[in-house]
Image: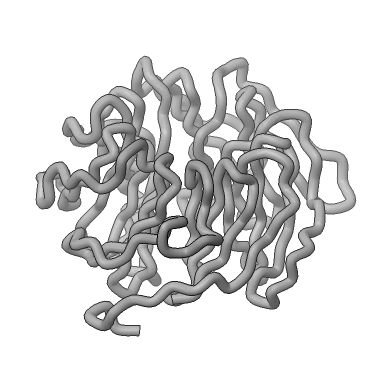
Length: 302
């Protein structure tokens, strides 16, 4: 699909089963997806087969904010209470408590280590053995999102990461967590970062605006009023399309220069989300998955 052509969006399928809002969706290496949310359930789905029935992977005792499939095949789940659950089928979950506020992201460094971002501003790195090998206090506000700097899809640069937090500051970090650069971005809080693999990154947050920066955090595109309320998710399909999801219940599609191309909402598609869109995932350049506070996972075909 060329982005110069008019974009049409159709609902591919719906996946219903969560009892509360959905906060995280990841694609597993086998092609299926895993979701989690306020009901503590971690559910496995096969959306491309249009199978509406999910399989309960784990039931946890608290809301799950983020998920990760580790290199060793285990599933990591970070929760509102600040616990990390390590899940392996047929085994009792391992639980790590860090005596900190909620875990908002789990970001791997491609070497088997994982960064955890906490609600009290701490950044902690765990190795494969779940040992703490680095702990850094970044802010006195929540750390909300973290993305690696990837020059192209086959050669990740593990020495640089971009971090967004609830102090409105965008930071560029070294692999050890030390801050290299910082700039004021979405005030008062950055909720989402998307790196476009060509030296450009997009941020969004509570101000409902999108901004663009180069890899050295110099502004490229400033203060686009993108949504009515908080932007929760920004995802790139690697072929020129950016999707954003918001508390205003809409999904919007943009080109790389942040020109608006398409709005997915109930005024145009009766099956669109009724409430906040919390998370987005591209399964392919033409298949987009979305989920939010209405507890239904929607799969869209472009």
